[in-house]
Length: 223
Image 1 (tube, rainbow, N blue to C red):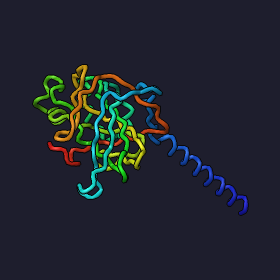
Image 2: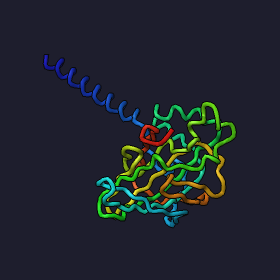
Image 3: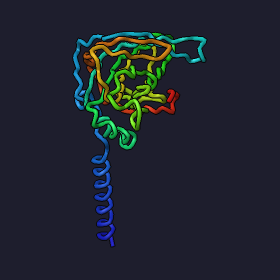
Image 4: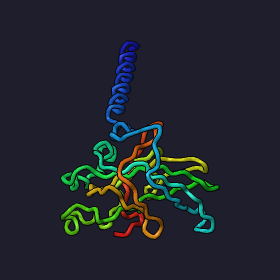
């Protein structure tokens, strides 16, 4: 009886070990700048800058966040799509148009309170939309052209936001559909700021994994 009980305990231990290893093997791989194929340099410089504001009290106090665009370019987003899973299933409609468009930025909270700047409504000019997308099944991706997802060095919040403490910075990479990228990108938030950003740039060194989140039109962006 004792020997039988010992065999059962050993079998149970082996089963737990096997399940643990299987769970680890099925976990999605983490994202980093290397897996995204993005250039990184210790001397990264801003391509364009703006000041955006958030408010913890409905507008009485406006907390300034300093935004620096660090990179604009077209890149593969296969690693992002893999991490998002079903949330990126609609992107398959865009694959025939080439690589997706990335706008990477560094945002610093220059205010007195914590900040959660929302990024879901940062758009690029619809003039860059590929031919044939003004009508038909792809129109909603381009008119207007809002981000499909955000990749950040912290876990994104609602409305593709990132959380910042006063004096601290965060990096966010917005994923847009494939576009006919010009040498200078017109990009910003309607009624808030518009930047003319040269294509190119690089990311600053990033510590730790990156986190991806799909951006939803239901967050408040007009259709």
